[in-house]
Amino acid sequence: MLNLLFFLIVGFVIFDYLFGSILSWLNRRAATPTLPPVLDGIYDVKEYAKQQLYFKENNRFTSFVRSFEFLLMMVMLFVGGFGLIDSFAYSVTPSPVLAALLFFAIIFWGNDFLVLPFDYYDNFVIEQKFGFNTMTKKIFFVDKLKGWLIGALLGGSLLAVIFLLFQKWHELFWIYSWVLLAGVSLFFTMFYSEWIVPLFNKQTPLAPGGLKDAITEFAKKVDFEISNIYVIDGSKRSTKANAYFTGFGRKKRVVLYDTLIKELTTEEIVAVLAHEIGHYKHKHTHVGLILSLANTFVLLYVFSLVVDSELLAKAMGGKFPTFELGLIAFTLLYSPIELILGIAINAISRKHEYQADRFAAIHGLGDALIAGLKKISVSSLSNLTPSKAYVFVYYSHPTLLQRINSIKKWESKNALKYMAMKN
Image (tube, rainbow, N blue to C red; front, side, top):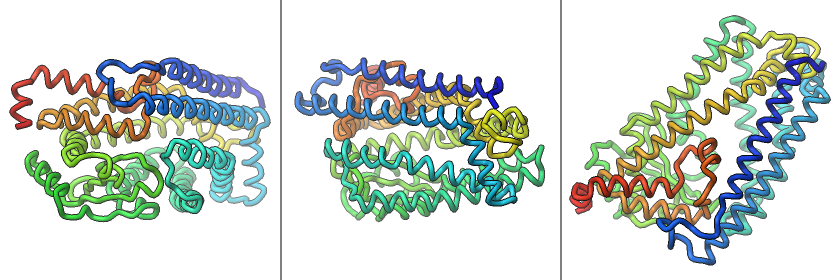
């Protein structure tokens, strides 16, 4: 049924598509054949030409996929596709819980099957063309199967419990659901690297030697207890380098990609880890978790106010209100608020990145961090001159140029102290 809410939802979907497309176009226009002076020398002429080709090809491909997904959503809305899937689910089983799970299974797997060719093309054409992909086709499809299985087991179980809470407590289900989701978020923050990552990658303790000694020495210097340092075989899928921290307290773990160890010097790796320790020292992980839980709290509360709306169900092509149709409609209606919150969260995240960079600089590793960031950017052919508008909306990290300028600004203000730290 084409009611006012239907057209509002359609309007939001169109706005989201046009807004993203315009930002993508601005980002494409911002690409320049010459780099700012402070970035001069990062790429040689041949490598920078390669980076520009990689960026443009990725940009075009992303725009194509985005357009496909937009058209698919338009078709689903105008033919009442969500309502048809919901009716089919109830024709298979009279159980509201099983019908909801079948509905989301069809949506989840249907979408994944439709975008599978795009994922394949991205990995085995674009990424392979530019020398990044090291994944075999077997690993690609096995990863997909594992992802579907984990999604079915974890996602299905979580949805089932939330739906049961909805049936039992109805008006208060959102509070119990929030407590459940908060517990799950905390659990995965603690154990994701131990339980989930090994399903896809092999993690081995960092072998004794100069690198481990340097990391341990720096950790002691900044009073950061660290014992779990692992190397992950990221090279089995990509040549791109990375490192991250996970967990809290005794469960915190440092994970280094083998590609990072190959690309960076010992001092540069220590600088990258100093940046990560800076996040921990400033409690950025805690802040991020609190913001995420607060956002989920508000989202669930607002959803609880409209979940039984007949107008929402009919806007989705349904015959009567159901939890699953209400959730889909609410997600689409919530998208403008989600965009605004996302911009705010990204702004906070960029501020945290500056603070973590400064932590490394304070301990005499500013130049090493800059050198490491440059190598990581070059090895991944990162876009060094993105549009300011695109950065403002989508980037959770400052650009390389912004990070270098920030570190150098701190160094110039604290020149004597910085030289003492380095020595």
